[in-house]
Length: 101
Image (cartoon, rainbow, N blue to C red):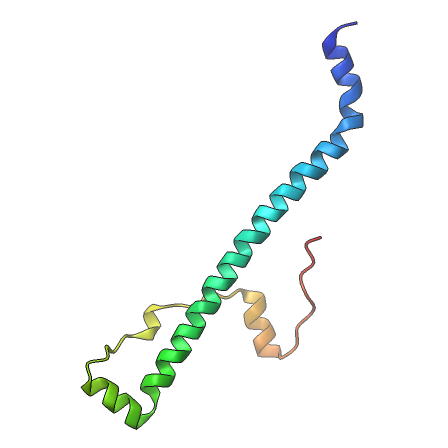
């Protein structure tokens, strides 16, 4: 018989295993990208909080200003959120965790 015939016969049997490995790899890549983004956003939030804390009090902020600590407009550094996150903060209730797997 022809090789294409055998390939056509075996493909439906083998496809679920190939698809499972392929899609698992894709989801792993997507999940790692989301984790990297989340870590970067968390770091930015912590840096903004620390900066505001240091310059927020009158005495500490005054001394840091005299010492030449730079004053930065923190509005230039936006924290990215989703509509669902904003809705959760407004309502005060989270619907539930996102299930990928």
